[in-house]
Image (cartoon, rainbow, N blue to C red; front, side):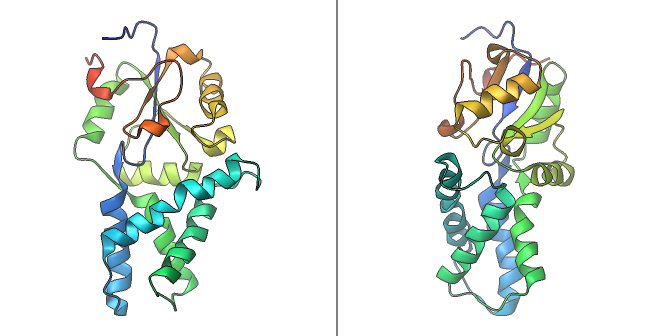
Length: 203
């Protein structure tokens, strides 16, 4: 087991690691669209929306467009996926409500308890591609006990760009080796030290 001596902060990937985005988005889409007469494969709808996530961010990473927060990218992607599923006629209020489903994602059953235990020993920070408002609203809705909201909008860089991790450590006043990235998706694991949360020594 890798030594955790000197680790002071845990930075967390959020989508998929802490919250169940797939079931949450499928549920929200069904709740809005089914009463309007749409009978879709709701899980496929969620997957299709999420599939546009990395390509949209890559436009920013590559410099093809200026830094653009995730709420804006999600909205652009939503309009595209609705068209691909032949869904039209939604009002601006309905589009905004569905886009903000990402602000209301449900945590995994053991996430809040696990984070609360870790918080007694480590600084907990988001290291998410989600923008600040998204992360704050999600935390309030789901009861996620973060110490600080960091990530793409704060660092002006989308994971897995090295700047995202370096700037997060700097904002915490720590060296990179004092921060541990905690993530389920392997693409988020970038930096000098990372482990799964199950390997951490808990109080």
